[in-house]
View 1 (cartoon, rainbow, N blue to C red):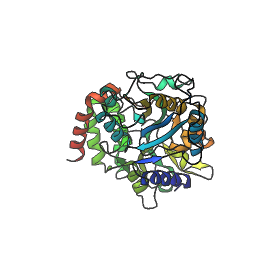
View 2 (view 1 turned 90 degrees about the horizontal axis):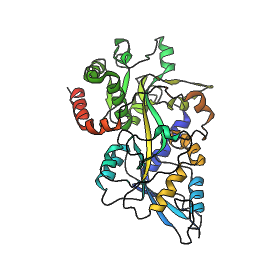
View 3 (view 1 turned 180 degrees about the vertical axis):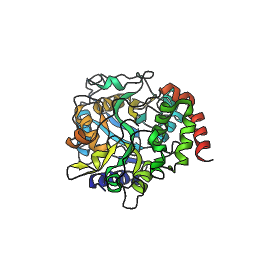
View 4 (view 1 turned 90 degrees about the vertical axis):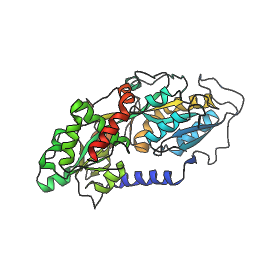
Length: 362
């Protein structure tokens, strides 16, 4: 197992263990300055107070960056974890009339329509860095700002296949081939954001025949578990010494964390991917909307964008941000990931998940 990845998971678990509410960047910076910046780039003479960011449990940025944000703007940043991306979107939707923070980050394109339709976000359109426009929502771009992206892809343990002398799969269709019986594990669509993304990839690939495809997957011994960590660190052969399955649903960035001797022992199958984009927005009725706007603008700076790969294992949306050397070599993004329109997801999500549950529980 790669040590870098182990540290990553440890950091996530540590963040989670701190509870649903945590503070960042409050070590020694001496509180607000006298001239905090506003969304327009102007400054005020009053202390800015606290800006509350509601986000998912995997949110993490270097403390020195948070401290710089606080020193430069005068705002104290308070981070409140609110579960995974799906749980976050649900909480924001249900509290649209009584916001639980000033800004939110981590709503992705598979869940974005739900809180937007609920009126959870106020209008705010910051100037985007070059390249970010590609990730803007078709509907709701005035409410949510793209911050990062990554694609959920089937990953394989190259070392396992080489040791067994078996040619690894390449496509979604291959996963239903008897040659790969009992070798594939995926998180569930109802319990996991990457699981949902993989389901959407199959839906985009097979259309109305997705139910038949999933039946074939299950007949071929596919294992469905609750979450990504269960799949990657419980069942995947490259994620755990106890793993028995060399094919797993993970991310296009995952191979950068399994580098040994200058080569990655895993690979993402780039013809199986579904792109996820994470967004940030100002919550409607926020106590500190200026602080929320300043926070989102800060998340678009090259400093934060360049920190995203090693902090949250995602790609920046800014073309001028940098990515680690290993990412440039091993974290290859798909050229043509599968897509499903957010509006279609919003309209059909509950029906699809009910039908998916029926298929996997037969």
